[in-house]
Amino acid sequence: MYKLWNTLNELKSCKIVELSHSLNNASPYWAGIPEGSVELSKTVFDWGNPMLECLIQTFKFPGQFGTHIDFPGHFIKGAALSEEYGAANGMFPLCVVDVSEKVKQDPCYAVSVEDIKEYEAKYGNIPDGAFVALRTDWYKNWPDMEKLSGTAEDGSENFPGWSLPALKYIYEERNAGANGHEALDTDASKEAAKAEDLACERYVLSKGKLQIEVLCNLDQVAPAGAILFAAWPRIEGATGLPVRVWAITE
Image 1: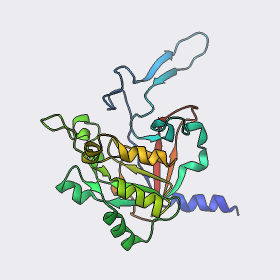
Image 2: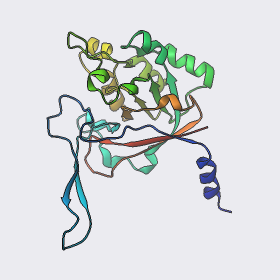
Image 3: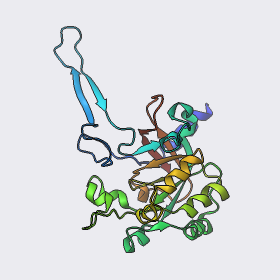
């Protein structure tokens, strides 16, 4: 009788995949964030209070904590922050580019333009406004910070991610809406070392695009045809926020 209700029933018949990690007080976060920045579920109003029988908690966390969304102002001074993005900005056609086999051979692998073109040869061109997610299966290292960072004996970090040419391709040739990945940073570690900066992340945010970091379960989503939804707290002035992400996939 009602079109949207029928559509909802159709969507519920599909597979729904959780793409965000569960968080607690032991969850890892970037080493540059001061200790004590995470304090989840602290009780500030307990059962047995004569004023009202209920439980209230407070939550303290960095914006870039766990699976999180980054807004342009995170890297670009004066650029848009969280309040510039509404509910309509959290829905995307989802393209999952799988380089997990290459990452098994090279943990620092950076996705290439050729990888993207191989994906398009199989599944069609990346559509306008798509969320392009990089599947590396790196999420399986969560919540071990040493494994997530790929920390070597010399202290260097070694993990997969994006290359600048690949990002320029999806945004300048294909007009993607956002990108995401399973690692802690956008840039493959060797690309960051080469640039002496997180040049890939800086590029994405300079384009006024959104990105979601530390995704999970991309191996459970169809490479093409799925829909990604992202929801975050409506907090003003945020450079980034923990985000709940899920996909509806055939």
